[in-house]
Image 1 (cartoon, helix red, strand yellow):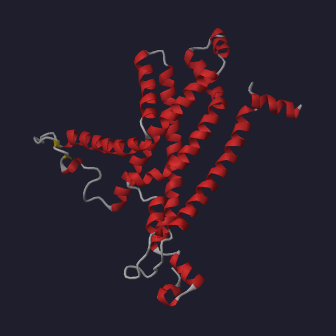
Image 2: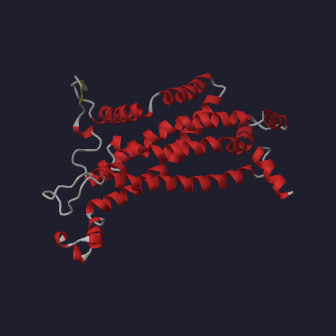
Length: 294
């Protein structure tokens, strides 16, 4: 990046370090922090939407829908995360390709399952073999987001289902006594009040989601853990202009600082949100606020 970096062998000290930290691989390392933040920014609301749908389904009086909601919560929460990430992404990818195969290649007469191989026509492959590299990366990121959303959506559904049940039932009965329909009661009474009960559990889930982002490495996404391992490994002078020893400890220490800092910022913001939600509510936090302002 800098003009004096043309011949790294002549450099030393801070000038060598400045050139080393601005190599192409390090730029990819810095971009990977953005990938993690983007994953969180997309996954969190998506998982919350999955969770809300699962909780609403589990609360439904329609038995098949209720069983679906409770089954989604129980099954996904019962499978170890790492097993789910290793299996589900493959199944999801093959499911998409199978659907495309049925539509695009109706005349295919060979079995799709050939031993351990999953074989579809070229037109059904995702992404296409001749697609640019960025298409492959975006597709991998999409699978990662969807997998994270489904897994953490189940945990969010369990939290929201408990929060819905925590809203005093007398308020729901009063709303119905005033002539509100079940739908009006749900959206105007239950949903606005459940968030104050759900936020502690959702806050904890957000922290777990932050810590789970290194699982991106298992999904083939070049995240910060991947680059920390690659850049920190011993660099042989035969293969690089910037040889060094095993620096993985320092790279992973940088990741530790990043995650701790991000966690602290999240705690502050969530605490402020909790104070805002509890204002005027008939909860312990709301009572404490009323006494403080009295």
